[in-house]
Length: 496
Ligand code: C2O
Ligand code: CU
Ligand code: CU
Image (cartoon, rainbow, N blue to C red; front, side, top):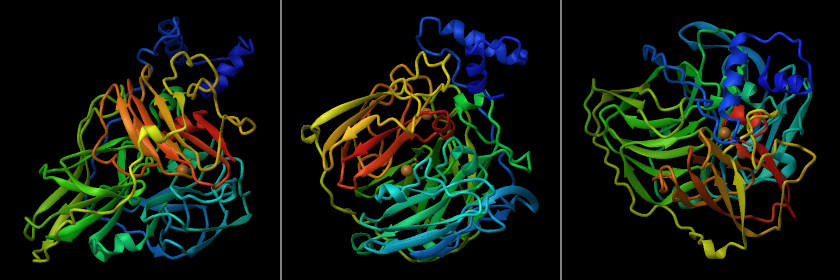
């Protein structure tokens, strides 16, 4: 039984239901600790260790398609690990994930989605600034057997976006079972840089799943709703522990963290530096060299990795390193994600441009108001929907924030009393991160640009500045830990 259901029942005075003793212990100890409505001592879940695998299967690169596409969400089977067949959801038969859309700014997009899942679903185009009717609102669903035509015009700058279901209280399960894909927007500013392309531009969708269970069943316990449903195996583009053959030169890696809840601290196994050139909302102004970078669920990274020092026969891994400050469940283990095998020495040099793109950096003085969102969830323990924003759970019939078209506002996400990391995502717009206080106390190397998802660690308050456009309508914003989202950690704003 889900904790939420249990709490509803017990709150309604049903005393005689049978509950496993362990669950009672956890709930009562949490409640005792929480009796002062303070923090949730020890309730942020426990980590799930990664089984690294053998790095013997080749990385799969999803097919690339243009502006007129079709997706057919369906239950199918896919070999996620060796030849073992798993029962998954795919946007086509035989594999998880879907094709990568590659579309130029200005193009009209027309994608027909025929829902063969046998349950309702929809598609949200994460990162795209498109009309509310096309945004995959949680109750705007395509019934099983029905189809819907998503059409919209791309009016935004180049960047790596993605798509996934956004079905009310079923997003986490549908994504976990395999539904997600990339959506790349190109423009002339980006094209002028002549960044590594073709085989030298590699899309990487990083996800974790529990591969001991070939049916990929999804049924989180209440503790797993707290921590998020963490997997025991890392998949890249739908295959666990893959390898990829490369040449000794510069590569552009376009990375999505498509996991339900797991945060990665990306680094190379030899600790060589790499260059961040972009994030959720496209290119940064200037490249930044780092040795590691965090990426939370929903976030994207555009990096240049220089493999020119290697010779044929060398190997290097993309890893996730240990990290701290993310509560009890995350960052406790380092592990390998993907093996690069250098097969050929080349002499193709690539000089990283010193200026990548230009856009206006917004300042706090430009904002007409600040809205505060308490995401600590302190004291929410004993209520239905453990994860809340401003002590509210998602309600499709309630407008939480009314925003004027074209307003510039600061939204502040306050996790200062919280014990869990929350990657906060806002639909339909891009924002700039202004400030982080508490916790890491600074912006990270990937946060100086346009973002749509920002990681707020326990103890942190993060301010973002949002130039709302005139794309009026009703849009959601939420935690992109998908267990938290489905648990109710989502509100909505009306732009008018
Ligand atoms: Cu990728 Cu509302 O989410
Ligand atoms: Cu989104
Ligand atoms: Cu969260």
